[in-house]
Image 1 (cartoon, rainbow, N blue to C red):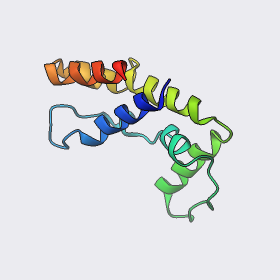
Image 2 (cartoon, rainbow, N blue to C red):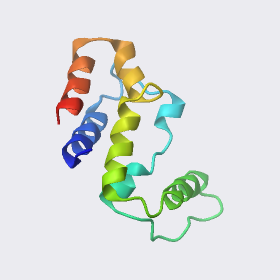
Image 3 (cartoon, helix red, strand yellow):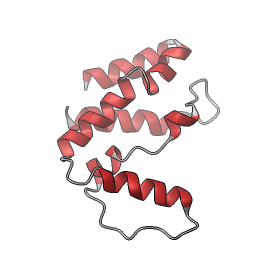
Length: 109
């Protein structure tokens, strides 16, 4: 998987309007550490405090994928976006031309 596909996928996700027709479910919104691995690398920060539940969950998820190569992180991030259980369903649920364009852009990168 190329860095170009990863960057296109991240760009599309970030550009989706909050009040638009494409709305991720709670499961789809859960933190995925692949983007951090691909952009930052392994987690080398200290674990958040006791009452920062979200921060701890993100830190734990990021730490669990320690050692993943950048290329593998690119691949996993894009595959999750395009697989059935992820944003592809969100994009396909809407079924409009804009969603089809997003999927085609990612696949063509």
